[in-house]
Length: 369
Image 1 (tube, one colour):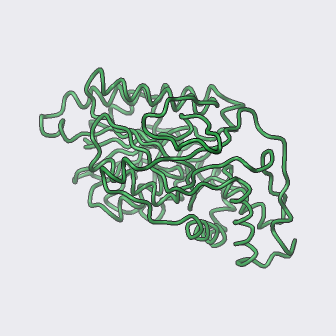
Image 2 (cartoon, rainbow, N blue to C red; image 1 turned 180 degrees about the vertical axis):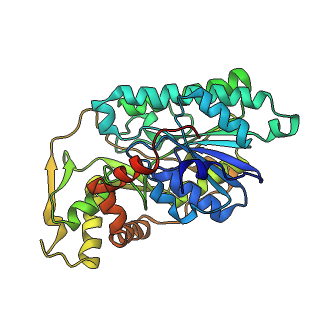
């Protein structure tokens, strides 16, 4: 099916517009949305290196799913799609998100995360202003952010709340903080009904293998060294991606416009603990010809600049006010994640050997949609 055919499917039901829906969290959100809700989903994605339409093959033929290729910095394209599909909500995932990449190429993060969010907000504001009274009241702009905007915590410090002062320490975190402030300003200044969510480190299926958990799984599977920054004591608050997606749906449905909601599962683990747990799962699930114990592959490397020591999410607000709670414990979610990567070698190989990028170039060239 061509790109034009994909984007021409009629949208008859109420729909939402999702930006960055071909990425890790966005794809899981769309898959879960189609499963849980009757509304249409329009997926707007630029298809950069981490955007993978193979993540959504399961629903590709659904009449409740539409893909359109576009850049959130392109105001004309966004305006066109809003007018064409008339969504009742925008769920904004599209972002550059890898801290290491932000250290080496910060300008990409400023363009996408700051300018892109501004462009999307401005076009959404004009769209919202021209809706009828009922649809104007129903409309929501939900911005998906990160706990990294809050900075780093000491080991004995209390968890991040929605009122924690911002203290970003990487270009990635700073770009997301700037986006958060823009979203807040559009609610305060223009009345645009915005919602912002902050979440910890996600893990699950379809995560691009530059991130810790899939990188460890794939390296260990091949008997290659597993790099860990510093001494591995840096702590992250982990959440299984399905729980995060459920939290976002809850905020979209019941959140108070202008409010911020932290979404966390209370799974604080050091990087070393995470890696060791993955190695133990692989020892159980995989007979590896290279080594007897996967922990033997762990190698400590020089720490990266500005490496935050600890993140911790306080989710009492969303739990008490909206009734959401995480369902997955860390170990069960991690086991499912390892099993998914072991069972989806074709997806993994396409990412690693460049087949996906070649397929993308052949089937999704830049053209008018």
